[in-house]
Image (cartoon, rainbow, N blue to C red):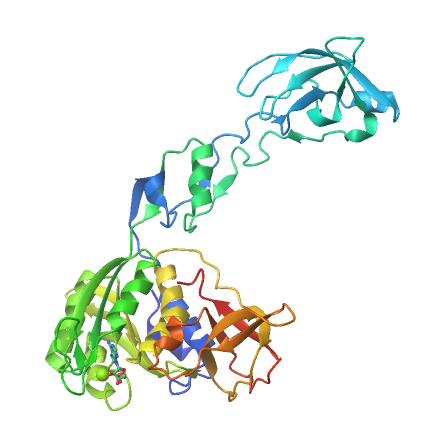
Length: 430
Ligand code: AMP
Ligand code: MG
């Protein structure tokens, strides 16, 4: 793994006191490597797990050409022979799904066929039942207009879903419901997945009280540990909740060491802002390779990032800000992708959608802003977004009420009402 210092020293325009979001993410990505460790699990237990190796299809799905409709299978040469008129075929038997019928119609013949039944030898086309007429004077005969169907219609080809020998699912895939079904369609009972990531987290601050404790004057309940719990649960990692740690160097060092010895990644909140950072900085630096950033973003400016070590164990460290909204914003815009990378998950960045801003938004170029927004249709039926009231980094209600981030890019200035802005939906992110 490259050291943080070596990655940073390669950057010509590195400024830790005004680091653009994109550059911070590039540094984080370069320092991280996936953890090793693979488990074999039954496919039901593999939901949301990360595939550790490609799954190569051991069979063709479907295994045979088969019918996509209930109707009559025939050779399309009959269409040309009819020359735009009616096609009349003698029905020699019925093909049911799951039936190795072995029927082989000759010229002028057809097979009555059900959806999913194997296409009879020599047949390439199915005329759906509803386009056919019985022929009164001739039993076991079917008639239809030649232009009601084209050669090859209503036939599913062998291997068209999954072809034998081709990768059906790629390493790094986070398995979704469709993937479980796809694995089942291949007859695969178990897959190799990466072991779950272990993530330890704690809050720092003498003013923090845990639920159930009296709220002394000047104190607040610790909410960050709960939002972190929720956000981490969505990533399907193993959680190690280490509670509240006092603003005390010895307590902080003990907590960091314990977290490092038991987890792959450690997330702290609070204690990295100016005025508080001094001893935090010193302890984190003593334990490893950590830098302190002021990121050119709002909310979420201060952040510590690096790798710490204790008694032969290593862990990645994210020292997030203390303000409740800043914790969530920095988690979604830095930590989430970093943890995906550590788990070996191949996940594209969440898409940004362009919608109209329903109101003017003040913004200065030179930092990225993540305002909290709510989407709704405007009077003309087009989607538009509006900010969720007060945007202070301590106003957690702004996150709770929102359904998207309004992402105002680094270079962007103010937004006028009616201007397009980019939004990132919470759905899929949370
Ligand atoms: P800090 O970064 O430690 O200076 O904290 C910044 C602000 O966030 C202060 O107002 C803290 O009281 C608040 N804060 C820090 N940690 C938490 C927490 N776990 N839950 C709620 N608020 C917090
Ligand atoms: Mg604090």
